[in-house]
Length: 192
Image (cartoon, rainbow, N blue to C red):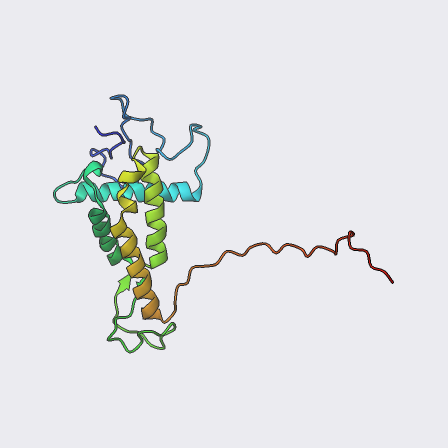
């Protein structure tokens, strides 16, 4: 076993929480999901539930990979393969360059262009998987979800979808709180 917890290969149901073996003992972990708090009465947030489902889905993908792939051997290339696999379940129409509606944010008629995963969905998914990897004992420097190839792929998807829709994604600038203007100093005396 490596320094982080692997997916349990005996569990093939992706909708149930996977038991993760503890790296310090041979007994399986408690039935609570790895992303939960120690209290069994605490309910998980929507984010934590989604993160757990995403982690289990990725584990199922690795188990179904031919040949089966362990998390310790997973690289950025496998993450890209997973993201491309997810495209088939996408709901966002991405116009091809040959489409007459390419570059139009609101096309007036239907077209045969493919449905893909939206960039924002992929970006959020990768963020949750990065966090789940580290929460399950993975080292940040070995995180396949943070690989350069994954970041470049996400940027490419963002740019191509923006061009296809005719809108640009610009990074939001943080609004800095405006400081109230100070009244003039009492040190300067005005002589009338």
